[in-house]
Amino acid sequence: MQTPFQIAKDTYVLPFTMSIPGRGLLYLNSALIRGKQPMLVDCGAAVQRDEYLNAIFALVEPRDIRWIFVSHDDRDHSGNVVQLLELCPNARLVVNFQCATRLTKEYVLPIERLTFVDEYTALDIGDRKVVPVRPPIFDSPATRGLWDSKTRVFFSIDSFGCVVPQHTENAWDLDQAAYVSGFNWWNLANTPWLAFTDPQKMAHMVDRVRRLEPSIIVPYHGPVVQGQIDRLCTQLLSIPVDETIVFPSQDAFNSLYPESDSLSFLREAHEDR
Image 1 (cartoon, one colour):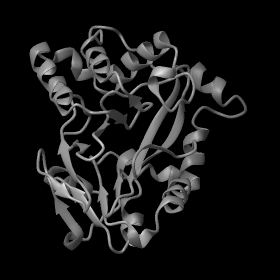
Image 2 (image 1 turned 90 degrees about the vertical axis):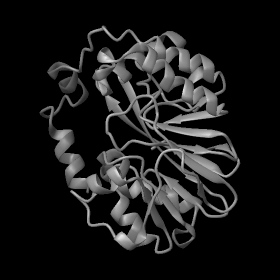
Image 3 (image 1 turned 90 degrees about the horizontal axis):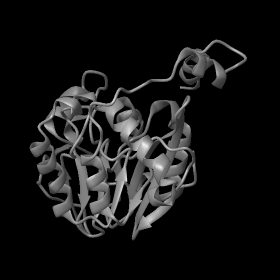
Image 4 (image 1 turned 120 degrees about the vertical axis):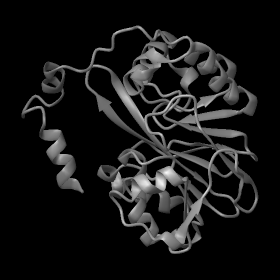
């Protein structure tokens, strides 16, 4: 992982990355709101468990964590939820009903520690209120982003992601041609249904983000976006939805893992769990 960094008062991003052969780096950005009642925003992927837990507990004591927000059920967002609930005895799991039902297909969750909060319902976490908001694009019906009313940070989950050529803490520091290319590729690859959307309805969803007036947007799968939020929203609406997405080929995988077959990295990740 890259070094965790602070983006706002009491707010930290844990920027894990993984390689997409032939494309660059894909982020997996968990976050910590280290306020009066500390909250984790998503739980990371199981294959990165040790690094994730070490990074979190270097910033906050396990017993101090009061809330664990899971945006949706995908494993890269929920992969360590059971371990966190075991290690953080005072924490409650914040989910919506769809997320909870989908998580219970794989995990045994302590029902008595669940807190159901859905769209536009504020949750008081001591020194601020946080509000789940469905982001403009998503790959699970359970997906909710999270709006922090104190810092005006919006955790946009799968929206506004981007595959990038190198790590950066701010999206606008990248070569912008490369950023736009990686932005279009990721969002079309992760949400191919964009090609079937009504442009006016999509514009309405993006305007909901604009009306939040966020100071910072933290995508789970892209670099943090600090400032120029209107520009970012316009970029999302400008994605060429009829563009054909080309995924990494067998040769691309072989070039990344030249001394073994192209699936060895999957076995290695499984053995590390």
